[in-house]
Image: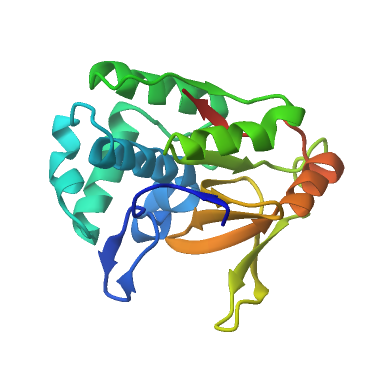
Length: 223
C-alpha cells in the first residue's frame, strides 16, 4: 500500500489466532446480524485513543492498554458502544446519521479533538480517504445496500492475497461497514469480519454507479 495507517491496527486474541480488527460474529443477537458499524466505530475509537496523544476514554481503558485485546473484553465493549453511542435497529443496524452523531458524542464526552460527518462528494472520495490515512485516522467505508432495488442481490467482491502476492476473490458483500487501513492507485486495504481484505477501487466505483448510490455507499469523514 502506498498510504497506510502509521501504527499497528487493532488486534483481538481469539481461539483461532489474532484478528485484524473486530468481528461482529463474536457477539450474538442483533449485534451479530447487523453490528458491523458498531465494530468499525469501536475499532476507530480504540485506535485513536491508543496511538494519538489524546485523553483516554475511561470505559475503554482496559482495551486501550491491551494488545492484543482478549475476545471477551472486546465483546463487552461492543455492548457498551451499542448501549451508549451506536444503537442498532433490528435487522438494519446503525444508519449513517446515527453513526456520525454517535461518533461525535463519543468525541465530545471523552474530550477527543475530532469531528465526524457522513459522506463526501464522489470526486473527493479517494482524496479524502488518503488525507485521513495520512493523518493516521482509520476510515469507515460503507458498501451500501442496492438502490433503488433495495432488496437486490448485487454485491461487491472482497479479495485476499495469496502467498505469492496475487489478489484472489474471497467473499462478496453489501450493506456492510468496513474500515480502510491503506490505499494505493488500485486497491483499498480493509478490515472486515476480523480479517485483512482488499477492495478494487474501480469495482467499488462501479458498484456505486450500477447498484447503489453515494448516500449509502460513502465514508465517515473525520477531521
